[in-house]
Length: 304
View 1: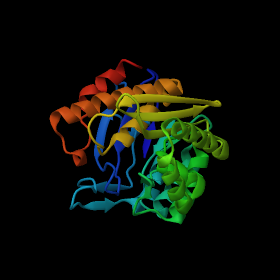
View 2 (view 1 turned 120 degrees about the vertical axis):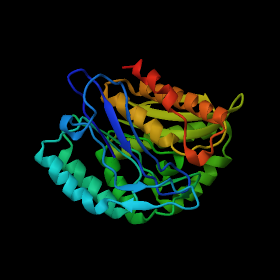
View 3 (view 1 turned 180 degrees about the vertical axis):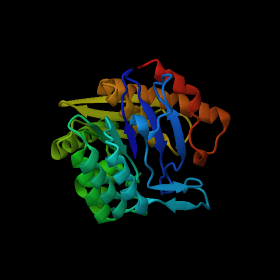
View 4 (view 1 turned 180 degrees about the horizontal axis):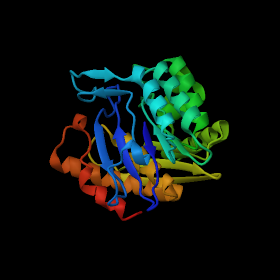
């Protein structure tokens, strides 16, 4: 989970402690400044912090890893932050390992969310038409509650269908979408995005990582906001790398807290990721090792 606060210079700093407990997504710990200034290091004292529910030696795509679960400590951490009047401008949640963790995040929102707090939920539950191993109907129910608390969500297509229909119906509908022709495929996904916004009372929904064949393989990201459906495409470079969803949602949520428009944030995230993935391919990095994005962080600063 990531929290954002903006200081008097309108600077956002991110501390991102992300653990993803499945073979297809990232499990890395990163800390960096986005839109940096010359201020403090981003500790809790100036309201900029991150909280991790678990820490891992590596992400779980590797054959062996160690995970240290911090769920039991989250209550004490929240108590201390409450004493200090912690009040974030933005909250972004990602992968949750179980129902207990989800309940803690729901409690966090109840305790710390204010009227103008930007809440983005990445409802990590599955990919490529299948649910992850940690998926349960109980976890889905909590994720639905989180989504109802958000202004913006960033599911992939599998997760969008899980939110709307549950696991069994998702599998049927996903298979049907894969059989549709190219234009119908995009049109149906647009309707799914509109349905998410309407059903959950969202400001916007962004469906990420949609593959589309046009003058080569493209990756599309759909944004639905204010009744408008928009797509942002980029060429697919190389294979699938761990951490891309985390990076996309991090850039998107930071931009939204900065007051940027939705499509500006989506385009910024897409361009940032495209360059990072191309660099990763060039360096021959294994997909489990994540994305070589650090070289391009400076480009985000130009958009503050």
